[in-house]
Image (cartoon, rainbow, N blue to C red; front, top):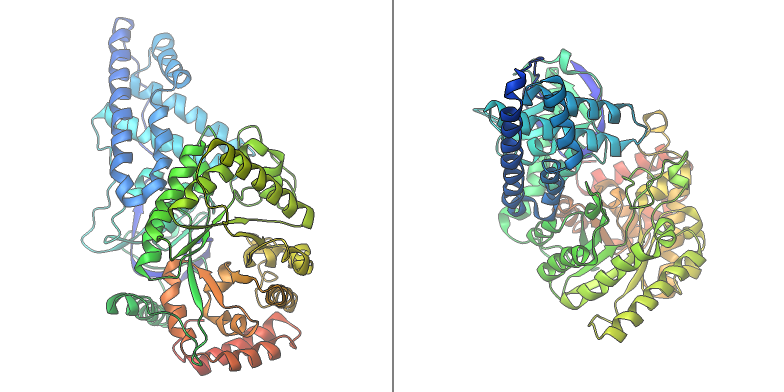
Length: 583
């Protein structure tokens, strides 16, 4: 048995036979043509480019139904086929070196890929590299008469293993055939990771070299929650994961089989609201399928995926209208303004930077406040869309009172502009701020006077409180939601919100983990926002929890001195309430 650890990008557990994909593309040997054939070869190249652009746009149209706005990832692919600089490079290789169209394409695009392999642009370089490999594979397939659509041909569901996967390959996977995927390369914000999450396929990326240790057909386990790839598991490990998988299916599928998820009440009849976290408009359907109370976190960074230009106000507007219209007037949609930088991709026109310490640098509202036209464009779009549903605006990564006041002041300016232009919007749209850094938590009582609601983003709150990068395996043991310092900050924020009589939601990974549900309820949290697939499990668990008991649990947890002690105590309490809970 071999166990490898990577970056978990889509939760879940899958067990099945391995299918190894060769994703490095078609290798073209050096081939030349006679000088008299140059014009004909260039004509053949342009015919293929025209066909490729049309196929790429058609592919995007077909994927709209499957992926919604996420299909925009493929919009830039069509432009590759029409890029004059790239085409000029292709033609140069044919005219000056007499290469075949295939070899000209391979030589040109491989040289571009190598540039990005050597670049220090991090995840952005990884994504662009994958896009060019995707472009190369599809164009060469047209030139050679090969298949242009990657398919997984299998008689039974498989787990796909590869060095890397292009966006086209991932998007076309049939979920009935692909149970999960794992790759040697890739990062948390790669297109493969984004697509896998949206399609709810368990996935791990960035594992490092492992393909030489596995053969097609070998039994493998993907633990997308822990980021583990287990090759050829021993009987004990296999039995353990079969049981875990059965529990997941029973808890997540139970309410789907019985119909809409019932409203969530604690055992002593306290109403608890469960919201869904979404990243793409198409995921609004997942929220509705689980009968959630609304969208507690609508991430808007997808609009900047794979773009060379910042999204227009109309593009923002259409994306927000799509979700608001689906959710209706009775389900709130909390739209988080742009949150990029740190571990998130960093591409905003005029602000592409490589900071030595990006987590402490220009990210989120700091970046937006440095680029007011960018910020105003998004705020205008949110306000315009607010008439189509129950929209709320939330500012991320606020660290000082002045930052929040600047954001609110800018929003007021945008409101005035819309009023003068006679453009309708909801003048009473609720405004909130995320609590993600210790400084914000410590002045929560002051921030509460400025806003209508709080949302505690535990992912960043944990890493900033403990000074532990959540994606760094060298300090993974420090990154723990149960650390007493983190719990005390959450308690401080909850008390400040209660005193100010404003709502407070927890929307980080912590809110979706059954282990912490009783603790959060005991700290006074009455709203949880998590990945939609987690909601039925939370609903089931909360119905067995008494808020009175939860308050006793929270009180006890706050007296403990280490994260290990807290986790042990919470596991004991969870097993007492729900013996078959997944913790």
